[in-house]
Amino acid sequence: MKKITTIGTLLTLTLPLILQAQAKLPETDIQSITRVNKQYGEAFAKNDSTLFLDCYTSDACLLAPNAPALCGEKRLQVFYRAAYNTGMRNIVFTTANWYGYTGDYVTEQGTYQQFDANNTPIGTGKYLVVWQKLANGWKMLRDMFNADSLTRTPSGS
Image (cartoon, rainbow, N blue to C red; front, side, top):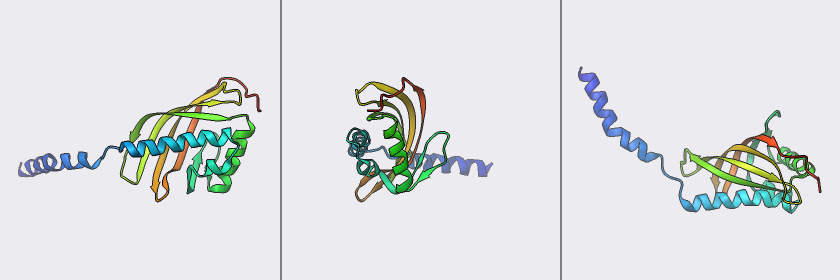
């Protein structure tokens, strides 16, 4: 009986500390990540793969559906070119939630909408991104997504 009481006391004392350790993502970090998400879309609008690659860490992996993991700058570049060649010219991300903020890492869950050169929606989907805070800001470490639907075939301009 003494063991159960001791465990109960330990939980009562430590649970508030554990819950406090799960800090809330500061608004300034949310704004920084939002800027990177916007830059991602701008990379397609401007046909600028450098802007795209700057959204990711140097050891990032993109986890697209029905494909092997695309890790590293060279593979990310291949993905960018393929997405651009399908006609994607912008993408807008909408964050639904944040998980596991540690100060150096956080996971973002959300939805996206893709657009062609005429700003016509061409697809929607959902994503999970593990972000890493580096000296030069928040960058995507792991980027996983899948499509809900293809609204229409892009015009490819």
